[in-house]
Image (cartoon, rainbow, N blue to C red; front, side, top):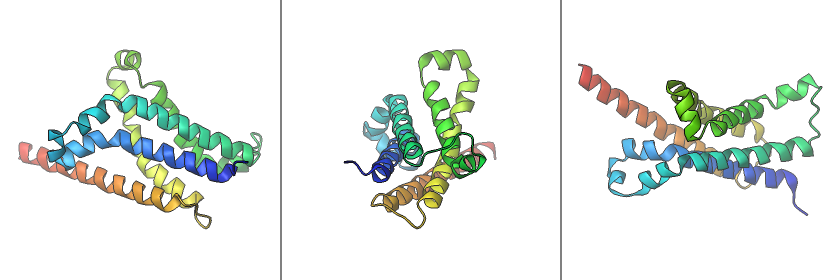
Length: 172
């Protein structure tokens, strides 16, 4: 029989890894320009939407397993407070997954890009979610998830710093 909380943790970890993979193409191109000579950023960029949808499905599986295991009561306000991070994260992932298609890009135009900027908020929400929910009862994948979250946040901040410096050089 499957240990549901551990299996749910593994699904959450796989969702995190898939999500991080969606962030890598731009980060690799900006922070590590030598990767532009390889096809890695191009391949990741080509399948970014599909990987993002996979990340959402894994995250949804993670949430569903935990909700059912812990008998989530939809009429209990305290339950929403306990699960608020996960609900917000899953809601953002759902919005991103639903709009990860060519039709949405055409219909939403500039708003599509604005919606997909929410992915950067997810980095910080996921770090908070992992560290708070797993505090005191880590699984084998918890330290890996925390380290992966920290690394992607640091690389994202490096990317933003590089973009800021380039922009300030052009304008000044």
